[in-house]
Length: 296
Image (cartoon, rainbow, N blue to C red; front, top):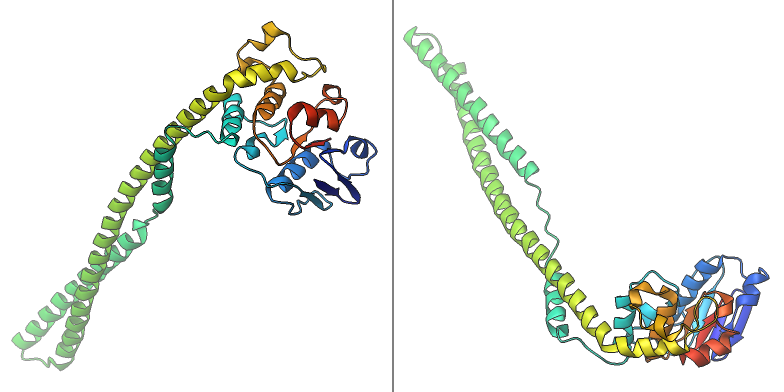
């Protein structure tokens, strides 16, 4: 493994950058650097920007590494244990169904149909048709009145013909606008059905994902409990036996993460931004966890 943070470079299975951080050789805070290094590991040594170039050249990260590659983080105990199980090649019984639901969900478009514009066009077209219909009726009445009086009708008849032509065109426009509105309504109904299906699928995916995490976590839970016997807590000592038998969710989250890492099958390095007294140095952390380590 090779690590570069700005002008600081280090290599080996265990890289300790804590002294460089303390001396201010790295112009960023510890938490930000930890996230940048973890991202660099996941990105395959692509630089991550924290004000200086950050790169990690190491083995590719495999299944489960993303959830275990940074300690501490905000993941749940179940998520960490499930990641350890995935790294060991375990799959949940609902994996195929979950993948199928996710694929179907991804294939459905995000529907978006705006009926307002189509409604306004149809309303405008109806209004214009009605206005012209009234004008045609008015002009027809004027023509008839002039005829009754034996008055000239040429101008009135020309205006009537012009209005009648405009009315015919307005009727055509109104029909087209109403047809467009009906098509938009049909798309809106289809969009509503699609949204309902997306909600159903999203619920199914969420439930299946939780079931998968629960199943995978249960598969490695005994091994993680055993691994606690070798993992130091915040004060540098391993939990006593009675303490290790407690519910993992009630324990110190970083300690559980370390136990899950020890159980996992990881080749890519993990980034530790923990209390310094947990491990004497990066080499001790790497030996305990069985993985390459970048310590801050």
